[in-house]
Image (cartoon, rainbow, N blue to C red; front, side, top):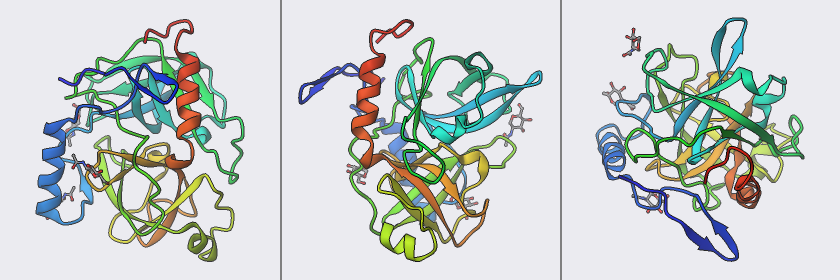
Length: 270
Ligand SMILES: *[C@@H]1O[C@H](CO)[C@@H](O)[C@H](O)[C@H]1NC(C)=O
Ligand SMILES: *[C@@H]1O[C@H](CO)[C@@H](O)[C@H](O)[C@H]1NC(C)=O
Ligand SMILES: *[C@@H]1O[C@H](CO)[C@@H](O)[C@H](O)[C@H]1NC(C)=O
């Protein structure tokens, strides 16, 4: 069991936050897979308790819109561009606690509010949004957990990272290996719009990033820390391509500030 712990960082009371006590079962499963496979690419043989699917009702059916990650029992971290096309909040929902999106046992959660970064504009950085839920998720450290977005550090320089997402699969969660790239090199390689809130990463061995992976987490090699979230690319699902992520390291204060503002608002229980 991983209860959320209340602690204080500086003057900001954090009635929230992340993976304080570590999720041993998850960590062991990741370590075993990494040892067996070297680099990880393909369907994940275990649950990722902080991964969610943000869905939108189009006509009568809900469709997967974007990936997201649980950073607080009532807050999902995702990309602002997921809401570029405005959908009424009541047509949005979040599916959490599942690996197979087609399973009808999936738990559904209603959305209270979508908070996009005010500076967001396509290709101008700040591609980040928070989705608050009307009810808290049942964080149990097994099926539901938070991910640490605060302590991954600056990973610009050739680090092994992993994207998790449902991509274009038939609902099964996949993992894709990426190596981070210095922003200057990334610009020289043709990504001229890369801003200070972006992080470039290269998929040499995996399938690249697909449209359905948008908003999903880029994680450190042991999958315990979120260092980015998928923003854009020049093509979908292509190996040997660079993709651009939002750099968590640059936006920790924004996230913390937004969560602090949410605490105490209607519906927010923490
Ligand atoms: C791990 O390796 C096995 C055997 O080669 C392969 O079938 C599987 O898809 C790999 N999984 C991941 C997530 O890398
Ligand atoms: C996912 O769930 C659906 C519906 O229960 C099932 O038909 C499908 O086989 C599952 N996929 C996998 C890979 O287990
Ligand atoms: C996971 O990796 C990070 C460095 O990327 C390290 O700080 C952390 O201690 C590791 N966690 C575990 C449980 O191995």
